Image 1 (cartoon, rainbow, N blue to C red):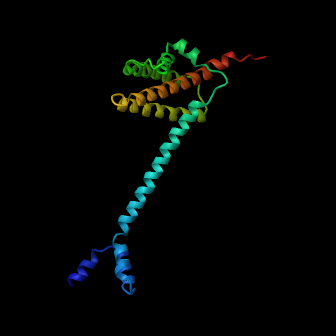
Image 2: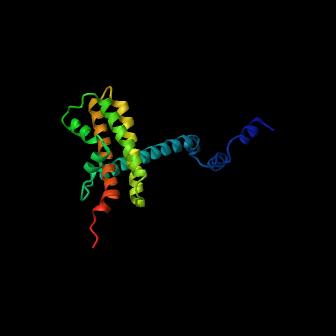
Image 3: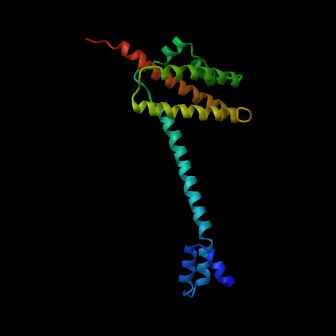
Length: 192
């Protein structure tokens, strides 16, 4: 077995077929160049498509969370729930609005405490619809992402850290309102 034949055995079948077919083409050298680097081009294109798909997914996720948080409920139960459970997200929001944030780490600890309480209460409240379950899961992930963003930006980017805390407080406010809708709203309905 000659050297050329033995080397040909280690070339993948698809490339051997391309070489065989293109050997009869007068422009075989330029086409063979493309055939040899076709895998790198395919990998590059696949990477670009995957990266842009991931970017669009992240954009959709963030936009969806912001839409959920921007929706207005007919009745806001968050104040009643905050008073009943001694939640401090309202004070955190007012400090962030007045630029009287002071120590952002203490505000973050207050929000983490509120988040633990409100998620515990939501998990043990009456069952929610599948749609609200999906929204709750998205907002829980959004809260964790904003918490991570706060930890990454608190030292260098004070404005971004403050914005992350503001979004975290919106998530807690939304959850408090959902808890009020699930527990307080049925009690306030007058049945004839």
